[in-house]
Length: 160
Image 1 (cartoon, rainbow, N blue to C red):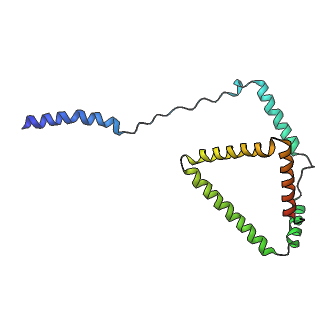
Image 2 (spheres, rainbow, N blue to C red):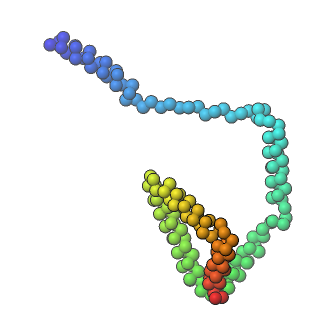
């Protein structure tokens, strides 16, 4: 009986040793590539980066593009005071924020479905091709598109 117990323990030992390395998670880390030293970069690249930073400073120091915040605030306040129905503006603004949030949620849900984003890209590409063929390829169809846009502008402006 002792011999049988010894033989089972001997038989169990190689199995345990064989399974032990497989049970440990093996992580393989690849080192990141070394960044080139500053002296390894060509002088021309350094010269270009200095030149672009000088241009950036020159462009940002221009007084023509400076924004007067008090003037902007007074302009916005004047436009807000000119609005007669402020509750509608607040409701439309809040509704548009909710609509953007809802659209973002729907797009995120569609994007999480495995094959659906690629299908949607193909549908968009097909529609773009059809639009180009229908409205942009020929001169007569471009004129038709321009007249349709003009009538839409008039409808939105309320002049028609």
